Amino acid sequence: MAVLVIADHDGSAVRDSTNKTVTAALALSSDVDILVVGSAAKAAADAAAKIAGVRKVLLAESGELGHQLAEAVTATVVALAGGYDAILSPASMDGKNFMPRIAAKLDVAPISDIIEVVSADTFVRPIYAGNALETVRSSDAKKVITVRPTAFAPAAEGGSAPVESVAGSDAGKAAFVGEEMVKSDRPELGAAKIVVSGGRALGSAEEFHAVIEPLADKLGAAVGASRAAVDAGYAPNDYQVGQTGKVVAPGLYIAVGISGAIQHLAGMKDSKIIVAINKDADAPIFQVADFGIVGDYKTVVPELMAALG
Image 1 (cartoon, rainbow, N blue to C red):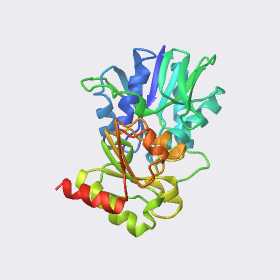
Image 2 (image 1 turned 90 degrees about the vertical axis):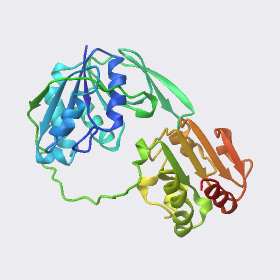
Image 3 (image 1 turned 180 degrees about the vertical axis):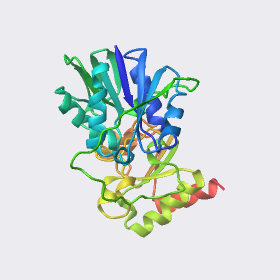
């Protein structure tokens, strides 16, 4: 059984989610290849080659692949699919875009967001906002799977796989028009070891920035937000943690003024240590918190900041 992992990368290095997807792939087979698609992505391919357990790295480059256009990525992967029994990708924004297209082109049912590999044809995935786990057995000859990175340990470094160039496909009638990039000195939310999130209880965008960001900066943390806070305009969409946002599992998650709706819990309940600050003692967030502080964040957060020096 041969497995192809589509790398998640920034052009110069592979992201941690790629290593974690390789771990899932190695649970299926020892024959694991990585596909790096992009523009001028040789450095990322060289980084992928250092992941332990990888047989070889395939590098497909073109201008359209540099923007991760789903049509171009899909065509490139489908052209290579004949040599593989399973195709895996992190359940990232890009992966959720092109993997269903790949499955449709191959006429198979996609298996999304797996958290466990039971066997070569059986997988576990969360449903109902993470409140239940579903075991899925696929009879398709070729598996197309997205992997929830927070559920797997990252594959170690130390490999020395060869890098081979393969043809990249164009995007057909689709074309890249433009993008607006958000730049930040803080850690990327999906990979951060510490996350500080704020909820609707903060009351305004000004209060959100005045309370959450200094605490995050003090801890070297990424900033997150509940959907209610995002919908209210307190924080941008890329801060959203939850079922319809980003799924995170940092070593420390601090929730300030977040009640803990099941949609939010689905995105952060696998965090190693959860600290909740809320003046409502009955807030659902306290059911998953390791440490809970019942109190007004306007008092608690300044005290925490002072204690941190």
